[in-house]
Each structure stands twice: as structure tokens, then as C-alpha cells.
Image (cartoon, rainbow, N blue to C red; front, side, top):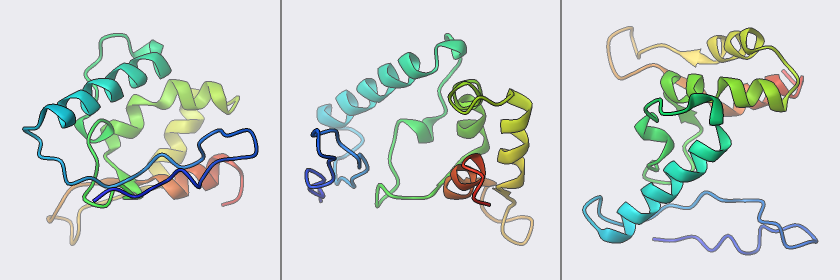
Length: 127
């Protein structure tokens, strides 16, 4: 299943929406190529992370491709870039991420997650 996001462009043709679900098998060559492309883009966008392992959820998609949560490791991977882009210190960004991190369900089920929407709203001073 692929969503056509071509209608989500600004007046100059710049894409405004990148997320889209897929039904590609993790064993497919197309999926492998997508993951490699995402790794390259993340390395370019986060040069301070050098050869640090990229958290898997940054290069794969949720079932819908629109999940608003990422792992704490994925959020921490991007701290330097986010701080620089928002003219903040890395400690300020880490504090926002901490405030937007949800624990395991009932303290034992699932994994901790970071609500990206809340992080973005806090970075923009809306929350």
C-alpha cells in the first residue's frame, strides 16, 4: 500500500509530506535500497554522529508509516542536529525529549517511546 503524497507540496514544488506506508518485504531488494538511502540521508543530516550506529526505527517504517513515536535512542541520535537547528543547547533538547518520553505500559509491557509531535510542539514553544 502506497499513499500518493505528491499533492503535499508547497508553491515552489517542495515536498511537505514524506511519510508513506509500504507493504514491501524486509527481504526485498527495493526495501533494502530504501533503508540504505535513509541511512545515507541520516548520516548527511547528522554529521556529528559520525559512525555511531543508527537506531533501526529511523530507517524502517511503522506499519502505517505515520507513527508519531520513536525510540529514545532514535531521539537521542538527533540531539545535536535538533539543537543546532533550533538555536538551543543539547541539554535543552535532551530535557524536552525526556519530558516527551512515555514509559512502558503498566511499567512492564512494551518499550519506552518518545512522542515526536510533543517534542516538535515544545521546540516551537507551543507546549
